[in-house]
Length: 361
Image (cartoon, rainbow, N blue to C red; front, side):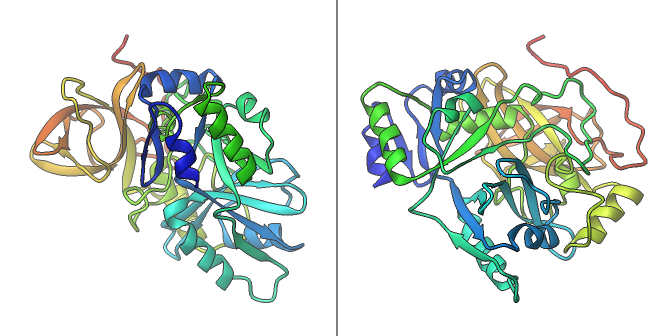
């Protein structure tokens, strides 16, 4: 039903992940950033946890301190494996009676299964609300006008209590990012879709939302990023999703050891791509230094100001001034890197603060 409603919007292109765009991705980005448009995000799913032990339970099994989370307050957590690798990520908001988790749709079932196994004798009840709850993205003001069940306000790129930032650029490219994800019921989702079909509501697709995310250096769990090896440090995710001083949880030993005593083996970098080709790399595409594969594209997009851009996980040993290329189908395109996570990232690193360089300047 949801896809049928979206297909009624003029210009809508709907694929297996939902609404991709409505014919003008660059305009959609501008409208989305300005608070004029809303983005139905069918690539998100909603889980909910009920029960009086829900917050202390989530605190004990994830990377974030949420025991004292106030009603309406937003945060972010990671589920790590015993070696500290990222398995799941979730935006978190509690309404005083229920904790809402906004997660990647493709990984929602696996996360629910794991949460269900971890209940033990505690008074918690994790649920999958697929088909009953939908996610609409936009600025805080844009989603505030909706009839919502809860609203998650993205804390990125702030450094939350107990967090740590690795990016050495000031101001951070995401510092002006205004992003929220509203959880709505089927009736409100249908109202928004009908208003868009009638021309009464500006709408934006997934491609616009992703371009704004990539430009803000904002990590997200995808198949390419969460490849079974991703450490939160590699994506500068200690900022918003990890509390370094909280109690024990699965993977904590690795998180503390890498941050306090070492450096992450890979580092997230922002790539300015050659715009002469009509294509951008697919997630999972190789990044090369000369003929050597030195990294992997995790996300790529065409930004309305920056042009073709990407996030990539590179080997820590790749020089920060190395000339890189990215694979696009049977060829390669130039990729100028901007450092997000420095090679010497960690508590002991002394990182100079530098202004961000842009090819537009």
